[in-house]
Image 1 (tube, rainbow, N blue to C red):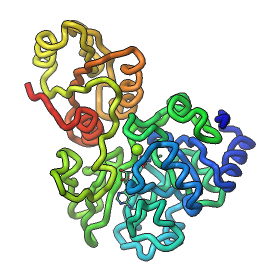
Image 2: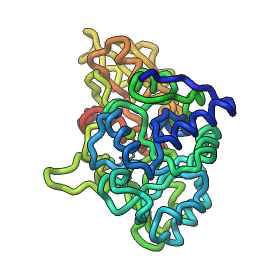
Image 3: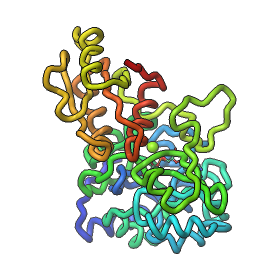
Image 4: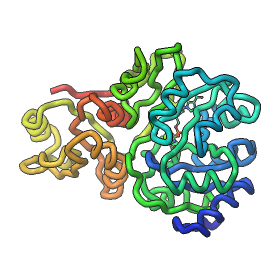
Length: 337
Ligand code: TXA
Ligand code: MG
């Protein structure tokens, strides 16, 4: 199959919407990362998504809608707190897990009786959902296990020849996937995957915000994942990622001892001077680090880096999302200096 590259002009957006309405898969830009979109109600189309990504069948897909008011068409009940959260953060980088109805096939929900609902803010994605008139199932558009794509070029690199088209909507603004939450009670939510809607932001609305265990710790043998995606190794480039928690000075000394003979380091902006090995930078604060992380991991593979020492971010705010992606890429090993 030839994968067509589409632009963000209106005629290309309606071409993309038509492909989706006809059961095809299209790479789509969102404000978080690029997604692999298909009609969420079309079982065959959804099966093709799993095939293109090489994704395990029990890992559910998020369903994207043009407006949160449509969530009631695909769910059996929506608690008040979900509406309050949606009012504040939708459209935007958040996914709310709700009990699904029969319009969402089990193939889409990975066999679960819930569905993650997301209302993206990217104007291109929004327009394509509207034009297609379909709920759009879309996982991140990477090969399963590899870092998520934040540009159309990344999508093509993973999916060329496997999907009908990719729509180029520029670089993803946030760079990490949406915050996934489940509703625990009338005033409590659980973060299943951290993103740019942070725990601190949710605490302005909710009495309690639980950070699921699987965000910072490896699941133990037999422990059930609240979010199936947390079972699988993720965000891993080919390079061996080593995550180092240290001050700049201690990080530098650690690298001098361990990586001076050919490793790479991924450091904060401004730290690259005097680092005793080859360096890439990934921003000076958490928002910038989220924006750049996946592109840098892909770049490190392209230049053939085999071992990469990453200076670990703090876990405050958006930092928790960056830390979560890195600790998974590092196989849950953290070196504390
Ligand atoms: O920002 C995003 O969310 C991107 C863009 C394309 O929208 N999508 C994305 O989808 O990251 P994906 O499939 O790569 O990651 C979805 C995560 C997985 O870890 C999955 O297990 C979890 O959300 N998830 C989806 N539906 C769920 C459900 N019903 N219950 C629990 N976890 C769910
Ligand atoms: Mg993904």
